[in-house]
Amino acid sequence: MNPLIPGIGQTPSLSDLDGRARDIFRRIVESYLETGEPVGSRTISKGGVHLSPASIRNTMQDLGALGLLNAPHISAGRMPTHAGLRLFVDGLLEVGDVGEAERNAIEGRLKSKGGSMEEALQEASAILSGLAGGAGVVVTPAREAGVKHVEFVALGPDRALVVIVLEDGAVENRIMRLPPGITPSALTEASNFLASRLQGRTLGEARGEMRGELDLARQELDSVASRLVADGLAAWGGGAEDARALIVRGQANLIDAGAAEDLERIRRLFEDLEQKEQLIGLLDGVKEAEGVRIFIGAETRLFSLSGSAVIAAPYMSGRQKVLGAIGVIGPARLNYARVIPLVDYTARVLGQMMDG
Image 1: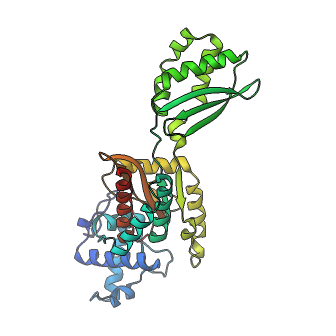
Image 2: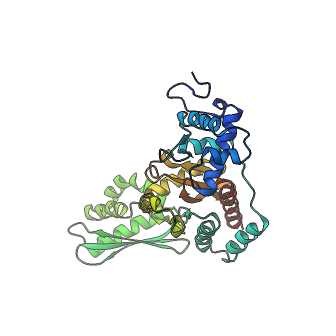
């Protein structure tokens, strides 16, 4: 058995590679990340590896058997698989630092928004898009303001508007169908019942607690008004989650005019970016991380077909309370050494602004 190749079904690790294989593997991945092109044995030998092209090819074949490299064409060189990229990122990547000019640019552009978090989040997405060369993405925080006022407003004989005014001045509106037999007094009764119980609670808290109080509503209200309360809660179903936004900037960066063979991958990636709920769910998973998280290709169901990579970090305020996530989406050959510190630094600057 070749000492480079672990048992069937095992995931390769750096310990499976001897010094020669590790060096050649690192050079191949670094060259691929820089050029996007498959790397041949002659390129490696010219780069300072004192081995014959034949010896390098043999090692490359072993790395291919490990599942770390593949060849897009029979006569082409090798390029890393997603498993190879993961091994490289986890064990061989040397992460750089954010330069002073970039730090100043990030801080200056974010703080120029005058304390407006909505504008700062928009700008953060644009900054990462421009500096990292992919699409910048931000998930905005869930709204935490308490409910100030609730009211049902009749729009006609069978429809009403549920109006929820929050303590931060925001207004949530939902259109709902009215149950048969509704009267203006029932609308007022239902409005007063909800307003008295929801005041000061967040939408998420209100939704959860009021579902448990529907029996009480049926006891205190007439049947039509209690039905209206239940339907009203259902009408604003998503509540705080619906209020969250997914900000995406720089999709044009994902299109490489010189990579016609990547057009299908780009098309799939654009379709992935349309999946708001799944993308928010993916970025929500970053909240549990203490720093930057990296997803490559099939490691996420969302980007398995497009073969894309996501580099994301949580941003937080106050006592390290995570509010959302920010990151970059792009091809699997993102410049990880450059993008990782950019995402991390931008997330930390956002956090500092929220503390201010």
